[in-house]
Length: 189
Image (cartoon, one colour):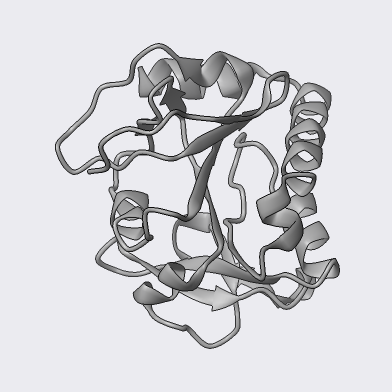
């Protein structure tokens, strides 16, 4: 499933990806939790993922404290503040990450909203990531009342994704056509 969805992403044209990313950015920027949130944990998009750079910049310009991940050698995520586009530097595996001092893996627990990448998300909030478990570890540190949102293209909101016992759900998804969709309550794991 992961391989097929990533291939489909790669076939999207740049204009289609840009329009989809703008739509998701606008839906998120108008969500009450992001309008009022003081601390937003986000991520810098990679490859054909929905582009998050405009979203991150928009949050930062409106005064939100934006935390971005730094990939640790063991696959866990550390977090550091975003201080504008020039504060990003190349990190492991070609990812961009903040140059600011790390705040520790537990810093994500202070976020009012957590935005996470996904290859697919099912209609119960289970997400299919890239397979490293980095975001499952990060989501395990986030309290049950915090809005966690996965960003995917329309075809990546699916009926079911394969799941492991350690997989963590997101509480909402944003897609270009559907906007922000919140999932009904479920037993958190």
